[in-house]
Image (cartoon, rainbow, N blue to C red):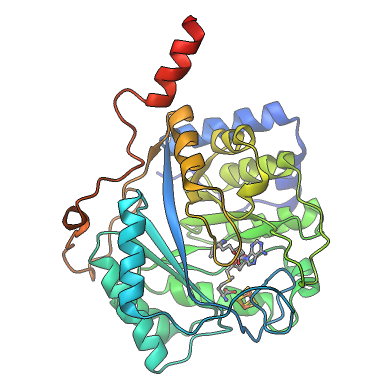
Length: 361
Ligand code: SAM
Ligand code: DTB
Ligand code: SF4
């Protein structure tokens, strides 16, 4: 029987968040080990299939048309281009692809049809396919499910109270409605937020109350640290302290014990040691690749070295939740590329052998 609680209060979550760090880490790591393999971390890849020119006014986002940022906008990517990128991601060890579009909401028509084709195409590569396209109706959610979508990302971003200070063009209720529309299908829910936008710790706890009291809880929760982009209203926000990120990840892990917690944007500001503490506290996914959607991400070689040093293994696709039945049989074309996943940890890790050699000197 599941022991997951759906009645967390803000006060309880604040108490968890603010307790001495060693106690918080211990509690979170204990919960983490009960529900997950602590040495397995999923490697996911982001693909910006439609970049920039968004009509919304999200204060953190470089893709909002109204801010003057330095990003290069693009029309919807072709299915062929998406397939090539997904194959590349798979060859370098990713088991999940998340396609993002700078849309307020999905509109029925040729562009949505093209996205559905992208979903079908990635499915055939035996990878988890996720989309984040803005608001969707119940009918659009069903069509995505029929195409074989594995996850839909739609972040709450912060507390209901603070949301109004960050975005004016839509409300918290709209976000919850889309999550509910996705929940009516067999697509898994991915919903999380951003810290470091000037919000109070109470707002972080408020967002976690909303996520933890959803029943079922989201299968995936990304925790982003704000990437302050020049030209956005948040350009001058100071980078969030690593201790805040660790506390947020640990608290998320405790209140959402079965969920995949994703250490998402902002890793370029984090040391390897800081990220290791996030994994210890319960994070079990990263986005790999030089770019997130529009902003930089750590170098892939650095990430691979981190996995080797920590002895982490990349998670296989569909390990956490079975693939929905709508999905067609996989046609794995990785072999055709003649490439092996580069992240698989060799029996005797080169980096760790090197470390052992140095110790014995
Ligand atoms: N337009 C869709 C939407 O808003 O749902 C999908 C794309 S949007 C870029 C996906 C998520 O990226 C946002 O909900 C937000 O949490 C995150 N994000 C955007 N800009 C960010 C930034 N500068 N730093 C951290 N996270 C960011
Ligand atoms: C999420 O929570 N973080 C990812 C993914 N979901 C789509 C996106 C991060 C975007 C960071 C800013 C950018 O690169 O544009
Ligand atoms: Fe548009 Fe999404 Fe960026 Fe908001 S977060 S401006 S909806 S792309």
